[in-house]
Image 1 (spheres, rainbow, N blue to C red):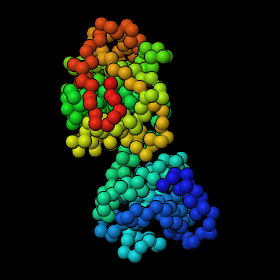
Image 2 (image 1 turned 120 degrees about the vertical axis):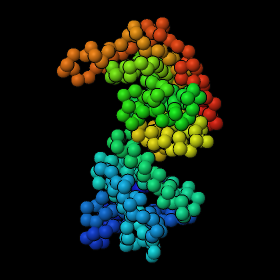
Image 3 (image 1 turned 120 degrees about the horizontal axis):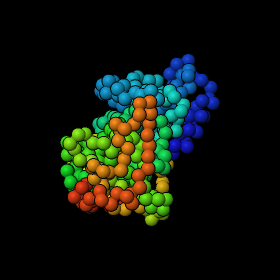
Image 4 (image 1 turned 90 degrees about the vertical axis):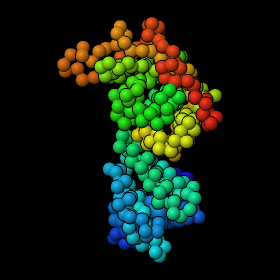
Length: 340
């Protein structure tokens, strides 16, 4: 399915004469070996919609729980679909999310096409909705270039941590995408990941002094990853796939990883919209301890709402620690993208 074509069909349906005061104007748009899909416009409000035929045995609550402020997901009888089937209906209610909604519909259709059989279609669709719900709880637009760079740095760090503390603990510790103050935190590791471009100065930006303040008695590591934008580099999708390859034998961790990536603002269906390629170099790791140059949270005067500062890596030599010992060894993913 081409996203631009889906927009065209929605517009053509809007321009056609209304069929009824309620219901959907719809046109078949995509057919796998297991089910039919339709582009649609809801009546009378004219909202874009996408409809998938499913068997009537699926519990409605399985899908209605995925509705968000941007779109609803429902499972009900509908005119125009095959006899004996029930419609899984996605409806967009906030036009600000129109582009993302089209990507979502494309994502659902792709998942349906890849389903091994008709019984797997509801499960695959639900998995897509779960990832999108995680995305939309925190995002309303595609990642910026700086956000892409930051996410790549976290993926590089995460990949190494899988060799240090194990895949399950590493993915569980990745708290940045779900609102953690520091990127990685559990009873084993406390670490903050930052990226920098060697061509623009060897410094990193600390957006909150708490990022360099671990709980009392716990060591904190600052992981700095140099990234160069280069035609010979790899995309964000490549880095995601490289980490996924490290988790293939850990199904629960792989599912959680995909949820965290979605919460961080990226879904595989967005790969074409984020084609920039980056080369990542071996991380440099520093131990944040007494004497480390930083702004302490307790020193911020009352009334100061936010503090952001730049930290020059050139002055951190005495705090440098061995990368492999601190965050794990360079992994060897089965995916061809190298991870430093």
